[in-house]
Image (cartoon, rainbow, N blue to C red; front, side):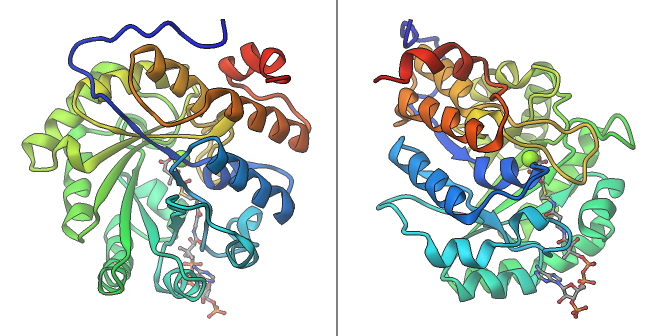
Length: 313
Ligand code: HMG
Ligand code: MG
């Protein structure tokens, strides 16, 4: 079968926004550095496949993430597709200056629910990182930019183990208090399970951060990402992060593997009768092409199942 039979399930949204993170979360974790021309073609193919939000790159320190050190060249050469958003990651004011110089209108800051990951990823404590983000959000707001906040290690941390829901809620409230439009809940190492997702979203809602302001960001290390997505949708979330072909990980989080694959997500959502605007076959062809560029197969079950059949369509 080339597409799932559509059978709706009560209590789910009519449409979902897919926040594609492959070019950023995916490529930041590749051992090789992907040429800018390949990245540009990747961005172009993703837009053509119907993805409306494509996280393009990061303005972080190039020594920390050399895979994305070409952010300036990439954005300068990018020809934005009409109506498509291209958010970029920005950790500090230096990153914001770089993004503004390239005409970015859409940024994401990225915090951590745990101290160990804050230190490893940002060289800051949780408090210090929030202090670092404050002027970034303020200035971006003054410039009329959109600002997303990520919160990593919401469901478990490779160094600290279990992360209490109350701790996640406390940092989430502070990030939201800075003035971000949306908060994306990161399962950075893919350990969440559906009951945990439901409980966290309920606790955030009780604390005044409802599902309309949330997105979910599941890595698929333990194969739980789709089950977790369904739990999030049932809790009212309508923005889901994923990466084409299941590329991804985080260079500063041991045991983080790829994100939920966009193709697996699209199959799941379309089967539930939920609109995404994505052409699944065009997307599979993109991931097959990207896998050839990277010299290894995509881990996505849907890409593998459809690769041969979509090649000629
Ligand atoms: P630091 O070493 O503490 O930096 O790193 P600093 O503030 O002390 O500055 C040191 C030097 O770096 C200075 O230069 C700055 O100008 C320069 P000098 O004056 O010495 O010549 N510098 C920069 N240069 C270019 N761009 C910048 C920048 N900032 C400072 N933006 C820093 C602090 C935040 C910069 C560093 O820790 C960093 O870049 N971290 C990024 C790590 C990263 O990108 N991780 C992956 C993304 S997060 C993720 O994947 C999780 C997510 O997917 C969600 C999930 O799965 O949970 C989002
Ligand atoms: Mg991630």
